[in-house]
Length: 182
Image (tube, rainbow, N blue to C red; front, side, top):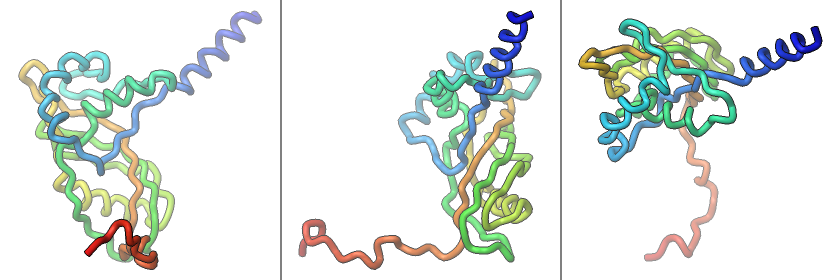
């Protein structure tokens, strides 16, 4: 009986430590990595993704394998191009919002089916959806091709949104004479 209780506790703890990688939508791949994707993706496909039919999802990784999860994130959920332009949703307050969401990268490398899971901060869930939709409109991923067939990938994402007027944090700092020379 005691062994079963210990085993049950161990299983519960191990499942709570395992988590799906969280993808960001605002950092793009550098050109060197982008050119090597076709080489490394097929080698890591079964390690990083669970695929069934035309859809794949990221495999969960335990906390102690953080480096492996980072490689999978780099290869399968980092955009090839990120637009730097977005439209602030009408009526949204200025400030910072942490947005957790799910999305699908379709067979063409475009973001589809944004679903806001949680929005904490200046914007509510609807405003966060409009913000992300505007921000990711032109975002492009390298399409996932497996055995000549384009597949979609279902992912979890997190983004910190800053809305409002941009202010330079160094605007009131004196110029450093060692930096600027005439």
